[in-house]
Image 1 (cartoon, rainbow, N blue to C red):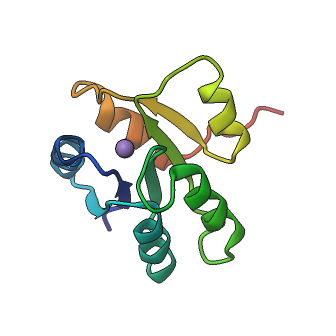
Image 2: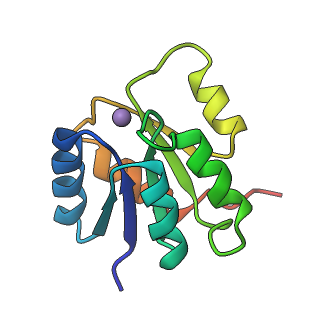
Length: 128
Ligand code: MN
């Protein structure tokens, strides 16, 4: 069965590009345009991975992630931050907030689907 991605993004051009690249890989993409919609959709039907813009209307990415990580239905769903505001410390701030990864925009058409594929496979097993 195909993995389902919840793409949380308020920019139409980014939604179009990301959806195109992911669907081309056979992934199923669901779109939320703000943080509140993302929380509602994810709780109703938890996806395999959430790609979350940090700067969103209604509820920003940090707040939406906090709610999702605190809810039992969605606590185990990995959430990757997707943002153009790549300033020093942003990556660390996102990882500290519970995001599993940080993908910088603009979306790289050549590498984006591979990045998402890697996230879907989860972290590599730890060597002991
Ligand atoms: Mn945005």
